[in-house]
Structures are given as C-alpha cells and as structure tokens.
Amino acid sequence: MAWYDHAIIYQLYPKSFQDSNGDGVGDLNGIRAHIPYLKALGITAVWLNPVFTSPQVDNGYDVANYYAIDPTMGTMADMDALIDAFHAAGIHVILDFVLNHTSDRHPWFQDALRGPASLYRDYYIFAGHDGQRPNNWGSFFGGSVWAPDPSGSGQSYFHLFDRRMPDLNWANPEVRHAMSDVADYWLQKGVDGLRLDAFIHIAKVKLDQDFPVPTADDAPVLAEPFYANLPQVQTWLRPFCQRVKADYPEVFLLGEAASANVQLAAAYTAPDAGLMDSVVTFRYFPEDASGLDQQLPAQYQAHPLDLPAFKQTQVVWQQTLAGLAQPTLYWSNHDMPRLLGRVAHSAQQAQSLAMLMYLQRGLPIIYYGEELGLTNLTLPDVATFEDPTVTDFVTQATAAGLTTEAAVALVSTTHKLPARGPMPWTDGVQRGFTTGTPWLQGSAAPVASAAEQAADPTSMLAFYQKLIALKKRALFQDGDYHLLTTDQASYVYTRQLDDALAVVAVALEATATTVTLPEGHYRPLLSSGSVDLVGAQLTLGPDAGVVLIREGEIK
Image (cartoon, rainbow, N blue to C red):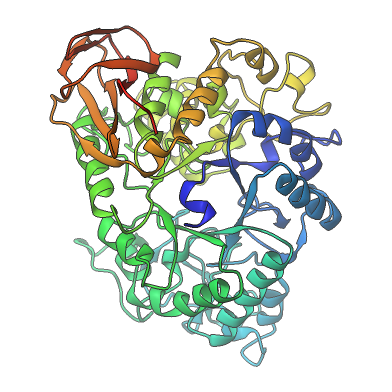
C-alpha cells in the first residue's frame, strides 16, 4: 500500500497563507514558519498551489518558467528548504503542475510568435487565416478561445482560459517530452506528488468544426464536448504517467478532472490504466436552481445544494470506485466558494458536514482555513474581482433593481476569488498575515484566529484535530462503506472493518430527525449539536452530526 492511500491532504494557497517579508503576498518562508501548526492539525500531505514564475494573470496558473520560483514566493533555495522541512515533519509535498497551458510570457510562446518558421510554433495551437476565427468555440473565461496572433500572421492562437494563457499542443510529441522533463526536475528535488491541473483539456477535436447552437448568432459558445475528456487525453497522458511511475514508484498523481463523471474517473484511476491514482471532480455538488430570481443572471446567485441528489452522487462515487481507487473528499477549494456560507450556515453545520464528508472512504482534501471556519471575503468593488463576468452580472443586476453594493455582496458569496483571503493567525496587525498590505482585501465575517483557537478545546480547530485523528484509524481508512436508507433529512452511513463498526449520522436540514441504527450498543466518538441516543433510536437536532462506535474494539 502506498503512502497516499491513507493521505490526509491540506490544500495550501501560498499567496494567502503567511507573508514573511511584508510585501503583502504569502511566500515559501511564511509557509515554513507554520509547519508546526500543520503538524499539530494532523495532516499528512500538503498540496501547494502554483509557485512557479508567473505574471499572476491567473494567480500562478499562467506559468512563465517551470524551472524557477516566482520572486514574490522566494527563491529556489527557499523551495528546497521548504521541501526538506516538510519531510522532516513527516509531511509529503504535492506540487500543482500546470500542463494544459502556459503564460504568453513563457519563452516557448514568445519564440512561437516569431512566425510559422519558429521551432516552438507547434508547441501551441495556431489556426485560421486572414484574421478569421477557425470556429465558434467559447473560452471558460468568456469570449472566444481564439486570439489574433500578435505577430500579424493572420492566424489565431487557442486559449481555453484567459487570452494570456495559450494552450499547449499536446498532439506534438515534443510538448509531451518537455512536460515530462519538467515533472522529472521537480521529482528529483523530492516532491512527493503532482496535481495535474486541467489535464482533461489537453486534447481537442478537429478545429474546423463549429459547435452547433440553436440560433444563427455567431457569438462564441462553450463547446466542452470538443475540448474535455476526449480519448486522446488518455493516449497522450499515459506515457507521461508511466514514465513518472517507472522512475518514482511512490509518487502520487492527482488529476483535476473537473467535469468528469464517475465512469471517466474510474477509467482515469483504474490500477491497470497506467494513469492517475485519484482525481478531483466538480460533479460532487448538484445544485437546486428552483429558487433563483428569474430577473437576475443565474451565474452569481446562490445555488443551494440539492440534498437528495447529493446523497445519490456520493454513494454512486463511493460504490463505483470501491476496490478500484480512492475518491477525493472535499468541500472547498480555490475554484469555488467556501463551505461555510456556500453549504453550511453555522459553525455547527460546518462541523457536521465535515464529519459526513471526510469519514467516508477516500482522501480528505482540506482547504486552508476551513479548519478555522473561514468564510468568503466581501470584496469592496467590481474592479477587485478583475473578472469581466462579474462586471456583466453587476450591470444586469443593477438594471434589475439591485444596488451596486448588494450585487457585489452577492457575487462575493458565490465567486472563487473571495475564497482566497489571508489566513488569520493572530489578532495583531493584519491578523498576523503580513506587516504590509494584503494582496487581497475585503471585509470578513468574525472568526477567532489560529492562535486563539489553538488555546480553546471547544474551537473549530480543535474539532478538526479530533476529526483528523479519527480519520487516521484503520476503520475509517480501510473499512467498508454502506449508506443506510433514511429520509432526505439525514445522511447516515456505516464504516465496518472486521467486527468493528462505526455509524456517521448527520442531519441535513434545520429540523430534528430520528433514525434507527443497526443492532448494537453505541457510544459517541465525536459530535456537533444536539444528539440523543436511546437504544437503537438516534435523534439528531437541527444540523447536528455524530460519529458512533458500536461497543467493542475500534480498529
């Protein structure tokens, strides 16, 4: 069994964790200073969001040099020291590896702009002629996937995300070889895992086909079936993964498969597939759109979790991947609003949902600050988002009658950027994050600092420490998972290993609910909210949760 089969991962956003030099941006030395905090929390691995040299158009996901550390983060010597310090603490390091695209400032792309004769021209995707777009495909960041070649060739280059982030041409074997070399460089430095960012997009269909739309409008349209999860993704990525595993058998390959369904996840992670060990999907959280305001655009309205569909989704992923691969277990990340405020509306409910998610079979990924109860910031104005889709939403929302302040507040609860606020370490200047001005500022809901919570045995931090300690037990690592049949007001499952059996029970609604447990005598291991156990009848108060162990030896 590999180390990552039992990993408990902490997603660490370097820009927002700790600034050590007062420039307002978190850095590598700031991270190193808080390794004792992470060790005390109980996690066994950290996933570092990108630290490569970058213009920061997309907060590091636009890489200008894969072989250098961004100066705002520190130096390569700092990175080496950080890896060594994590390993000395018994914590593995997973590096975010951006392989679908680069920055337009990357030397490869700068050379490609010299024209069709450039040796690096085919490292990227150029098509079209006379300034005409090759097709009607739309970018995830708005507008067309095509931007005019600045060199004046009349061609356009492909960018699935921002126009300053051109896609690499994985159809070119030289690109695949170059990315393998980058991975090898970092694995030689001692990195224990790679998170393969946006890997599902490395293949595209032929570029001369428009995506069908029901109108004659020639506006760009999202064409995900044309550039997501195509068969060539596996064909091109398999040699990359196999090379990595051949040279570094213990490396953990975690793929970001945002739109992959469970069958694709199984294909990507099957032991005989020669691909990844686990994937992260955004398909975990089906939403209920029935209550949306029809006068406002849907994009930045709050979408409640569709609880019955959520139960179905979770059990399907659990059962489909059983015996095959470890699913990832998460509530938040840098690309979505935080758990508390998006799904949970109180600290108690957040604790209950954490028990529900992380004690299932799989690998917890805890987003930095979740263990303190952080919520999204409320950003001060539209400009702070630097996102044209926000500008469009606020324009339409104000036309429908909202004030600008109300529209910005609404976006702040649903946009990904406000989920990246600075970590509150103390009650001092800038809450101990920096002595300067934080790179991202906004108003935050009151939350006790890490220092305060470390001294409080009833805090959210103390709860997460207990929860992680439970997750490390063999019963919750290796036990079978079984979802019990209950009404939609509760989510109840068992974990069983040999004779040891635990029940995890959570109320999904703000009303009390009663469930009947499997036969046996139980005692609580961890709880949040009002819990009453009489014989086999368990009554959960509103938003309450509990972990029960059947009397006997716990594994």
